[in-house]
Amino acid sequence: MTSLHDWLIGLGIALACLIASWALLLVLARRLPPGILRDLAAFIPDCVTTVRRLRKDPRVPRRARIAIIIAGIWVASPIDLIPEFIPVIGPLDDIVVVALALRYAGRQVPREVLMAAWPGEPRLLERLLGPATKRNT
Image (cartoon, rainbow, N blue to C red; front, side, top):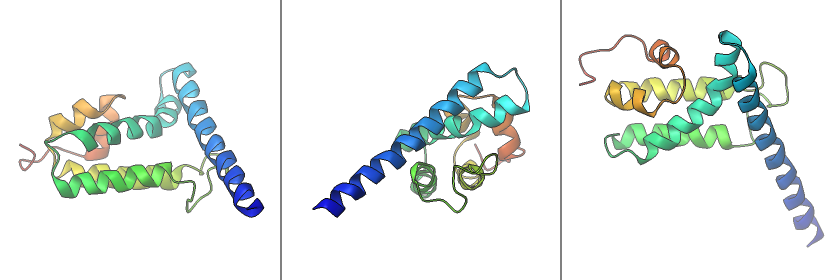
């Protein structure tokens, strides 16, 4: 029983650290002047919001929804390829996974649906998705 209790305490501490790092990113994103640093600090929170919105949207096909949900689980998971506590590169694997999932969804979901779900700077999502194709109608 004690080992389970210790494990739950450790899990709670890890979850608290993850939430604290996200809160720090949100604070940084709001306090930084406009530019690349602000965009990078806001990227993961914007991705989490986009994943949450697209997961509930009926216009998102099942395959795209599954990719988006997997990306959301990856970001929320405390297990990463690159540990979050490493400065600068810690969130890199999260960014790559979410970017790949959004690019995949961008080929299947109408562009206006993705843009409506994105709470951040629209130019960032447009740059991530690349040029619009005729398939996204």
